View 1 (tube, rainbow, N blue to C red):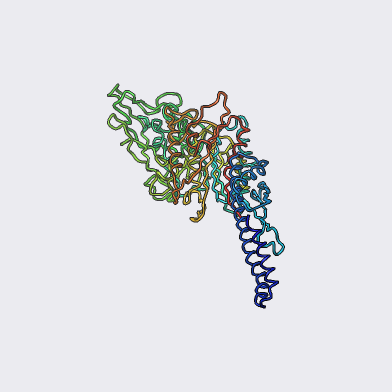
View 2: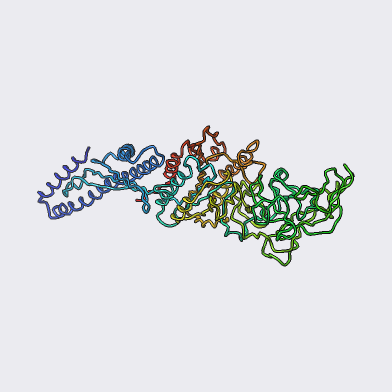
Length: 627
């Protein structure tokens, strides 16, 4: 080093100036040179100290970020922070002039009201060159860096399996604790929120349907087509769609129910809102005399919300041209009164009392009743009240002109999958395109209307994005096992809950803010049923796994979605809870739906639900360096 000889040289020159007798100017110059050199030297030494401190600040910031990343990913624990901090800092801090360098670390865990932090403090000194003259042989410096968890705004949608199998092996209890219990996901994420709106969470309980709350019956985004129509006008039922019997127009009061589970998937009920099965149509003298009220559909697991009337239309031929043409039977299994058949094979013909059947939801000709209700235009009968070999397709349109026997305000809140292809998209609903609307459904399985508030095991309503942590916890803790598995409808509504402008009134986003949009989908089994009964019967899927095919397409669309900056919009975590014995196969659709392989979790015990949600909660903690 050459600096100390320089100081000695300056000292010798100053001594010569002090002893010089050649003139006053030299003495004055010598006197003023001391403070000038002190100021210049101080500036040089302070610049060197500032440079060392700046380098330390950068090293501490980088160290803090790497520590936070390690802690987030679980590669270190909080007890490793001190040693890991020293290792990272030593590799990053390369200033050769700093001496006596040391760092300390302090990790503060998150609480219900404060975010977690990592505080790193560093100190050191340099040996001064010029400030030694003023009595300062060294100049010390110190700095600090703090990482705060949760500064990126987060919107997290929880699609949670509420199906009947969740009652087994303590799964539903473990799920409630993992999400809403002490130290659960809601508390983890809420601790990251410094101000209201930093973190939002939605809760989407699902079975075959989701429950969007019956109070929404007046919303324009609901498709009432299936809910209002009879079972003979349910396109989603495919090959399971019911058909009218050829003696349809001879069926009236006192006749046997013309439907059975083998002929349509349903039988008859006593009245429009009853769930009491009857073998014959209510006879004359009853309030609902002649009403043909379909029971729950065993194929689609839905209730129909109307009945066919039986309005007398005189007597005449009601079917001809088929050997299957026959009179309806009465309760004694005899032909109904006044009905006779003649001929055989293609010449057979049957005559009897005729009835016009209308469906008891307002039709397109209803001009005085329920003007605020949707209309149905389902076909309800054969031309001229007669089936023939050339008139086999019903064409007569419903013309019920009275008040609905089951208006839409009795809907319990269930929503089924959207009409394809929008069952697999995130397109927002528009009234001009019915395929973008959400079909109302009356989900009924295992003798329960699962969306009804009076159900003993209600499928809980969706909770849109909220930062009301107590409300979210209450909703999760109220979840009960219900019905069959349709992961797709839960995933679809998790997606909708994150879309601004959709049916769940998602809060607006700031264009200048970064958002981390996350979907967590948990299910304990394979898909078994959805809106299309041909795809699954409630216990297994049809060949080719069509439910999974539709869900896989939705996952692909979700993963391909980009924001306005061209960045991937959603991070998807999927969890399969596989406690069955023998174990279910790994769900390929869940595995492939995850954003990456490390975001799919296969669990084999209920106890792993808590640790998995804790792991995800830690991974969701985003960082910002606060100096």
